Amino acid sequence: MSRFSVTRKELKMKMTRFIVCVAGLLLTMTSLAYGSDIYFASSAAGSANGSACADAYAVSGINTASYWVAGNNIHLCGTITGAANSTLITPPGNGSSGSPITIVFESGAVLTAAYWNANGAIYINGKSYITVNGGTNGIITNSSNGSLSGSTCGGSNCSYDSSSSGITINSANNITVENLTIQKIYNEYASASGSDTSGANTNDISITDSGSNITIFNNILNNSRTGIDWEMSGTISGVNIYNNTITDHGWSMHLGDNDSSGYTMSNFNIYGNTITGWSNWGNGAGSYHTDGIMMSQALGYSYSPRIYNNYIYGDLGSYSPTAFIFCTYGNGSSGTTSGGCIIYNNVIVHTGPNGDYGLIWLQTNTTGHQVYNNTIVGYTGTQDIGVNTSGTGQKMGNNIFVNVSSPMGSYDTSLTGMMTSCDYNVYYGINTARAVSYNMGGSGVDESFSSWQGLGFDTHSSTASPNVNSSYVIASASGSAYQAGVNLTSLGSTTLNADKAGIARPATGAWDIGAYEFSTSAIPAPAGVHLVPSN
Image 1 (cartoon, helix red, strand yellow):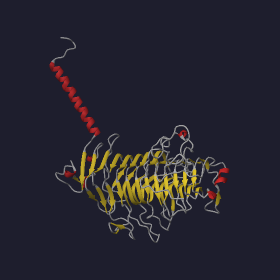
Image 2 (cartoon, helix red, strand yellow):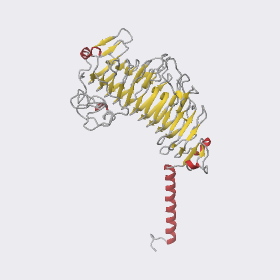
Image 3 (cartoon, helix red, strand yellow):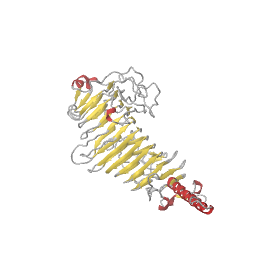
Image 4 (cartoon, one colour):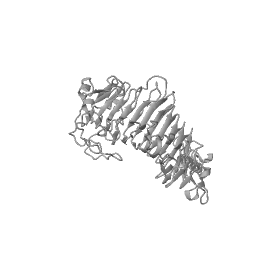
């Protein structure tokens, strides 16, 4: 017999071992990739084995540790009603890389309570690799929380006036919240007396302390004091907040520190969001200043969020409006924040009639902000400031300003020392006699456009029409924005090298000014688009 030959018995044994090994490998791969699907409803259904919505476990057992294993999907079925001031889901386990634990809202699933606790209906505390997926129409809501003095909940006055959140994420990493509607966490109304300050501690999504690889996208957030609130500390990295629709808040987003220690930030991105609706939240006491996106950092620390491709429109109200994008400082005893916000490809539209505020505000004691290729539209008849800036080291270029009284302003006594560069902008429909206004809190000083240019700024800028259409896109090659901008590929920003619609800007040669490149192809208007006011 050849030394390479085998008996039939030996061959059969080898084949058996091979099949067992392959089966074991496939079983392992299956368990890693898919995990188990476990279903929960308000009460037990059918055979109550958790295998489907028709056979769901009762939700009272949802926080059992054995269900929360990496790769598992925790399904929510139907309407699940929690007690007032309760938290329904507190994940006791962690997922893993490639195998997160996913909370899945089945079609029509709703988590509702008179009001959820300040920790939310879902409280993710110190865990990793958890995904909350709203599916096609998942909802978290309060039914009876709001201003007792006038707002309505389900057609009658609200019964509760309490702190509440939809979801809270605390000291957690690798967390995703997607495809979810969070609504009516707090129903506020436009107070006639202007003294209603209730609802201060209500948030759709609340995040606290450090966190890395946090993703919040494709959500609809309505009706609370703050849409997304993050009280930061420690190390913050790998954050993406995008494609959310956020309406009816005092602060649509508030992201920053709440102490003097500051935080360390890297790879922090806010993009593609549609933001509007502040009218219910202004009050004469001034405790609700209204904002779209507000970033803050402790004095003496550095931060560098990228804020781009957003559509922010509406009216911030008449009581204490601040800005559609507000980069400011938090607590801390001394120093200046540096690094700054990087703001580009945004369309910002003030629809009036209230006004006289900065549409973008880069506050005192902050420095190093960059504002490029935005389209900023003011409201006719107001004293809107396009960019209200202080500090030093600010850079601006390639922006379109329409119907703002002054493209730039400052509460400080001078503006020339604040700008490192400012050029290649279009200023259309402005008050050319006060293109720049500063010392606005004092005697007020106006700089005409020509005198501003005489100081070495905006030497390549124009006051002629950019010829944008109702979607804020350059309508023809004849406007002042067409191929009149500076090429910024040297900044090395992949997302700035394309416009708001994703059209690539040229690698060499002049860019178009504003959020959009000129294109002969139709570009979809931003969601809820508002027309450019007539001049």
